[in-house]
Length: 120
Image (cartoon, rainbow, N blue to C red; front, side, top):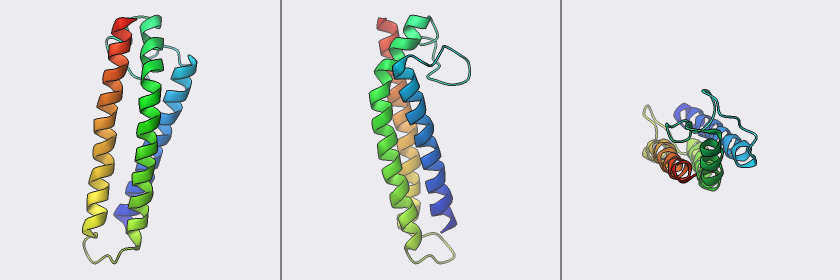
């Protein structure tokens, strides 16, 4: 049960951060910086590349955030499954799927941003 609830909370937190960065990046309200945003060598090359990369990545990042929230809800609901000493296999699978989606999705979003920044 704890794995499901803590894992779901972590996924929601990551999704909220992705949504926020996508929103402010798309509007152009996210200045080039060393802390928040998609920070690759291509996106940090110039202000124009930074803006182009974040605009291009906003849609995929929002889609990823929606998918991650859906997986978080499924993971939280899996806490209702009978749990023994070990978490239910469905809980373990959803946990792994949720965090794998975050990692794979982040790579795809970063790739999209880098391509757009390179073309800017």
